[in-house]
Amino acid sequence: MVVGLDYRRIMLHTTRALIVAVVACDAVACGLFPDLSGLEGTDGAANDGSSIDASSIDASSIDGGLDACPSGRGPTMVSVGAKQCIDSTEVTVAQYRAFYTSVDAGNFTQVAACGWNHTFNPNGGVPGTGSDLKPISGVNWCQANAFCAWAGKTQCGAPAGGPLPFTSYTDPAQSLWMKACSANGTQSYPYGNVFQSGACNNPLTPDASVAVAPVMSFPKCVGSAPGLFDMIGNLTEWEDSCTSTGDAPADNCRRRGSGFDEPPNASTGTCSYDEADRRDHQSATTGMRCCAILP
Image (cartoon, rainbow, N blue to C red):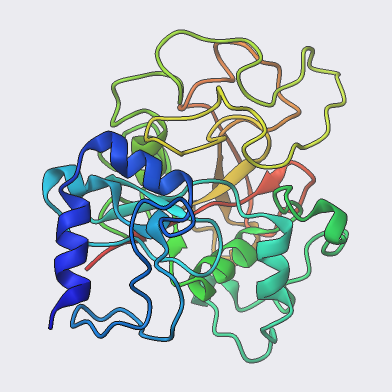
C-alpha cells in the first residue's frame, strides 16, 4: 500500500497557494491534511511516528518534481531550482548550539583546507538561550563548512555543487547564493528591482550601532523564493568561494550579503555586494547559511 508516495503526489500537484500555506505551518496542526504518521510507505520516509514536516517539501513541485530538500538540522530549506535548495534563514544560535554540543573537533572530519581548525567554538563562544532566535555570528569559514556538512547540506557554492571561482560571485549561473538572492539574475535585491530603505536589517548611517535581529524579523526582506529571508542585512554569510594562497587559514573567502554594519543604500543592499576575508576570520557581523544539491 503506497500511501506515503501517493499522498505526496497529491499534495505536490495542488495549487501554489496551498503549498505556501503548508510551508507556513504544520500540515496536521493546521488541519489541512490528516495525520499519516506511522503509515507504511515505500518512498524512503522514516516511519518513526513523527508527523509530516510539510515545510521540507520542495516548492519546485510546480515543475513536477518529487524531490524534498534536507530537513531535521539547521533552518528549514526552500527550493530555488531543480534539485537546488537553500536555508530559508541564517543559521541560528540554537541550531549551531545543537551542532556544537554534539561533535568533537578531534572526531568530526573537516575538508583538507581546514586541517588547522581545531575548535568549533565561535569568537566569543556560543551565546545563551536568550539569543536562540538570532543568527550565530563569530564563525570562521571552516566552522560554517563543518556545520553544513553535519546538517547534511553544503556551503553555498556552485549550482551543481562544490566551490565556485573566486571572481564569479555575481554570476547566478555560477553562484547558487547569487541565483537564490537575485531570482536567477532577474532582480537586483532579494525583494525586487527597486531599493527599499529599511526593508532589511541595515543601519541608518555607516556609524550606527544596530543589533543583529532574530531571523525573519524583517518581513519585507524576503525573496526571491517564498520564505527566503535576510539574504541582505543582518549578517554576512560565508560562501564556498576562496583563493588558494598556500596557507589555508590566510586564503581569501567570500562573505555574501551586507551585514548590519553596512549603510542601507542601493549599492550595499544589492545581491551582488560582497566582502572577502581570510578563511580564519571571525567577527560579530559574520554568520552562515547552507545550501543543498539533490542527487
